[in-house]
Length: 204
Length: 222
Image 1 (cartoon, rainbow over the protein chains, first blue to last red):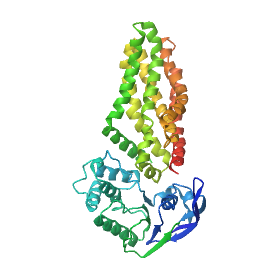
Image 2: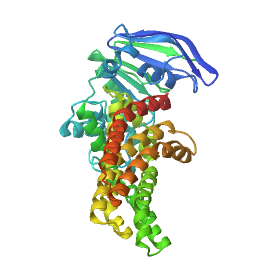
Image 3: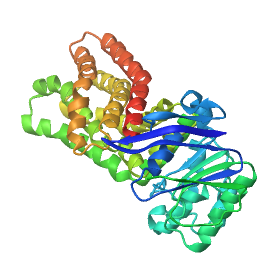
Image 4: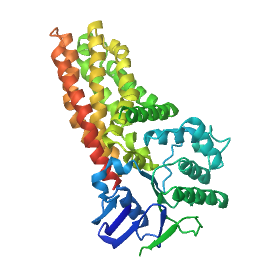
């Protein structure tokens, strides 16, 4: 479903990687590994179509993602190392707003349920400014609870989380893969995810 | 399509309500700059009536400029802009929503306040009506054109000054026709021609600016 061939990334005048390729099918997960500064985040941003690759091609269901455009983005869920939550809004408002901006239907009950699952019950009406770093990350990850889109691209999802939350996220990813979804993630932690096939790609 | 624009407007208005200091400071800037002129020039009604359109419009341009740097900067810093760029709809629509929200919290209050401030310049009621109308028609163009500048200077250090240098020259047509409409009323020529041209500028700005802005944002996100 997701194919990348011969990708090259150039930042400034430095070439971070070249000739990177992989193929990922439904129910499979790709672990992206590598030291700091080897281009993991750059590769993820390429897969989302945010950064065009210096060379090479990315295909989704056999079509180049540039040509698919909105069709591809409708199946993509990206979670960057920035949380993309608004400090002034409450977790509930953040969750509802991001769902509406992604054109998904998420009612208030489902959103509250998602916040409860990530351990933020009782914090739903508190402005995010008052939450800790880990709690903010949980707000960002609460999006995944009811996320039905096929391709998840997650940049360091486990950062700033405690072990219980890490297990929960691994569970969510596992359930997503069982539904036939795809996931690409970077992490420096080894976390067991129950999944059909786990591929690894090491950069640098 | 419209649901996305509405969602963006709703979110931005809610954020603006939680950060009212930004709106209020731009408004007070407008009030104070406009009020300084009568105080500085002294009680000469004829001179003040002549100056009024230009002063009010220049103050409106500057007050709009104040809030522009934050139009995309906050979303860029916390990663929301990436999410908006990945929405399964053209980025231009997201920008259109943000421009309309920006107008609702900056341009619209300016236009509604202008007649009160116009009284200090001894404008008659017809000129005040035209002034308000011209600001209502012209300020959307200011938000639209400003968005292009805000996107181009996104992530640039000292972007605020660069933004003014980039955007203020583009505001000149709006300034000329906006102030011209009030001038024409005062001299008895009728404002229709100026207002029509202003309307054309606003429609053109609202239609083309979002796409130019979206292209600039994609470059900033790379």
